[in-house]
Image (cartoon, rainbow, N blue to C red):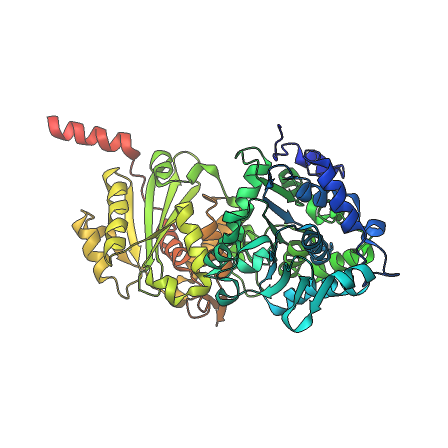
Length: 561
């Protein structure tokens, strides 16, 4: 049997309101049986308490058919065992979860089997449990077959002894489970938790001995840049959908805007809200979406981005808050493939300045290389950061994000104190040896270890300069803002730097502005502060050094002279 879970033409399909599932049910009889059970469930909280078959749209039935139609009754194995549904808020996700899992409980043959709906909070758990309870109570046959226990949020099948339990997640609740089917609700919330990956591994580990088992990851977009297990699953699902990864056991159904529409601003047109809201006009009220668009735009970009994330599944790349740094508004559009590595700067620039900031056990150590491109005189930025693993313990709320940055290659987790400054010195030496280093700018407070490492790496003392902080850094902050706004500063589009820019809080001080770690609270901005240190130096318009060719030529003639 040949099939593929990839849907490479999804962009055309989603705009045309076509199915995002690229194949028919693998076992049609199993799909038909499940749809009969699912369709007979009653949606009590809808007007007139209709049956599911009377109210749900075709995309829901297609999703249900794909899940249950992947089960091979001859071998007892489910051919597609993992599913991901990314859909905008209010499209009936919790009700769908209730219907799918109740259908699975009814169709299950395994004695004392376990089914779980795992939610990050009690409130979210209730969103799925209450429809399950009501579906059972509204049907005499189900009421006789299933025992409902509200205090345990559990439904028990009286003949097989199998259970469906809705739980608010914590490590004690899910450890040791041998679930046949697991529905993970609001995965984006789990992405913010430091222990989520281990917790979900415990919850889904039972599938190792349950070949008929399945996992469904269901979520809306995050209200912040995706992180942790949510980011991992979303990136993987996109690659499977696009055909970049072949995984026939994983089916992604992702309601999100095509990149071309995002680039063109099509997601900001309320007429396109249907793209990520397949239930628009049913469970999603069109006038509500229209009012929400208008109100969120009036309330400002911060509010509008939040609305787009939850109601149109638009991924937030950079958080914009009311007291944000003005340069953050222009940060995303200045991303460029021309400066994704330090070598890019060395190859393209006539002079490079370095900024360094941070480095405490509770901090990131930020490094910024800012080059002036030969010919165009544009500023090209590349950054990196280092952290000791202790920061993962001290900042547990950000641990998933730090691990993401490390996997991306934008942050290094060092195991020995001192390795970070040695690596910083090594990068500085690389620029110096290329003949491009103007100066290295440091925060004068606590530069001892960094200063020693730079000098040991061969950086002349006269090229190391202390950069005054506080209000004196205001000129560099404003220069960076203007360069970004006019398109004269490009960067590599690193998620880590977008996060740092979103963390930066501006504090007015007389006629000046400050961006300080104190104003930004526990959120990290060290690489951004390193950038400002480098901007302070580049703003002085340093003399061009000539680049690698000039450096090698000088070295050659020096040797023969």
